[in-house]
Length: 270
Length: 307
Ligand SMILES: Cc1cc2nc3c(=O)[nH]c(=O)nc-3n(C[C@H](O)[C@H](O)[C@H](O)COP(=O)(O)OP(=O)(O)OC[C@H]3O[C@@H](n4cnc5c(N)ncnc54)[C@H](O)[C@@H]3O)c2cc1C
Ligand SMILES: Cc1cc2nc3c(=O)[nH]c(=O)nc-3n(C[C@H](O)[C@H](O)[C@H](O)COP(=O)(O)O)c2cc1C
Ligand code: FES
Image 1 (cartoon, protein in one colour):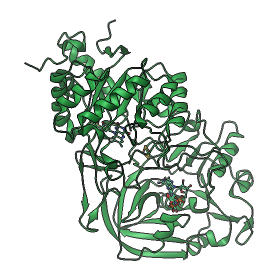
Image 2 (cartoon, rainbow over the protein chains, first blue to last red):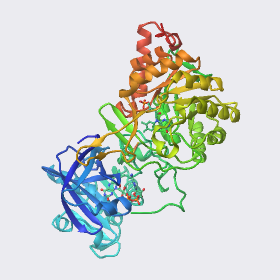
Image 3 (cartoon, helix red, strand yellow):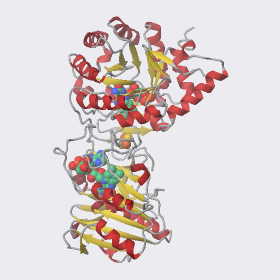
Image 4 (spheres, each protein chain N blue to C red):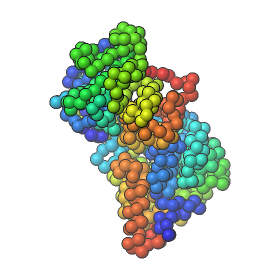
């Protein structure tokens, strides 16, 4: 695979629930966890998705239905042709003693990161936060992993709470060496805030999302205000150092026109 | 120490002939500043129109072996938002910033120009040549010398104190005629060329064009010889300074453009093919090229290939 368009047949579809599915393609690629691909549904659109797994002969993405494209993607069946380009961007670096923190669909790239950590025989822990049990993909697989702690906001699975809430106790139990997080931006910023309460800080690797059109660093759509860093090239995984100087945290993201909606116009998804 | 790379573009002092081309890293003050810091002599913002446009769906920007096809469809946040970004840029950087504007109709051009002038850009580039909205806007204005002349005259009348450059495309019968229309109606410079074509890529499995807009403009190394020829023809026809743009990736490419008649040189797609370091790399390679040959100013090379 490369940045040039190539189409592949979907090999199989794993249905977690009607609005949350994983898609596997016959394809071998070299990709770091946290890197993403552009997925083209002919006749519809092309959007970025993280790899949720890379296997001997297959790659996998996991899609949550949130809007027009992702809802249409739920109809994709084995045998359908889909365009894939990538992998793009900078991913996570697996490190011994890492704690993974995922919110909702943000856990997709962490699944691949966990796979890499296991293959490299590095010890890690993984906190998965979901709104409700329905939002959890790969439930059986996760149930068999001793590294995993699941929490939900409505206590339908695991303890009640948010992923960030359990970090302090985890650190007391055994110090966190580095934090890797993926999920809604408020969660990422909370993880960063938690890491900064220590001296020295706990290093962080945080995976961000911005509207993307090219993924090759040219259209400027995904640039962060304050530093001009491109989430598609220098990101999506950024270090605490790369977060410094960015002035747009907590503000609505620029949309497809490049305009940043006012707080009121912004539609929130997570 | 003398700066061999210094050029004077229609009265604007540039520390390097390299100008970030419109549509590349040009939506925000921060992205423009990042490119300015990496060594661009001037930076051009993304073309903006009166109203916000989301542009075409994706794929809209498609790499192939020799550059890019793009059909972004003039996505832009609207002129008022762009004024705010350009003002923010000017607080951050002393590097000259070029605003870029388009209109859906001839009458819209002076309107957008007057609004963007509030940000006091160093130059206003008038994009009469976007190839990717033909379905919506009809043929690019730049294929018709009368229309190009009229747009130039109207913009000039509304904006008298900021230099204007007209951005042309290859899609016309005679570049010389179009360039004369610009010169006769008060343009200060010409930017040439916009992306070329349009072209198309079809996926063999899906059996349909890959770009959502089906076709899109070619840019990058594939079009360098076309751009060099265009600059040559324009330089032969008028004495206006030219921002030679299209496929430039190396110092040698810059020299080609200048020998054809360019004063400054646009760099767009090379940000993808060579990375953002392309600006500093070309600057240092160009310096060495000139030093080794005892060339102290690019103006000594300007148009020198016309023999
Ligand atoms: C690096 C990266 C990795 C991602 N990984 C995954 C993943 O593994 N699984 C998953 O389900 N989703 C992932 N997403 C999000 C996914 O791209 C969006 O959910 C999808 O684009 C929404 O499109 P839509 O038409 O369904 O919804 P819309 O209603 O159009 O948008 C819903 C949300 O998605 C955002 N979005 C829409 N289009 C884009 C775009 N072109 N680029 C970036 N964001 C966009 C919108 O800003 C909005 O916040 C990732 C996004 C990025 C940037
Ligand atoms: C993604 C992309 C977007 C562009 N958007 C604009 C634009 O908004 N206005 C414009 O005048 N030219 C635009 N162009 C054209 C470039 O400014 C330039 O003229 C052309 O790409 C040729 O130069 P290059 O080969 O160095 O890219 C765009 C080009 C690309 C690749
Ligand atoms: S998506 Fe185009 S620069 Fe990042």
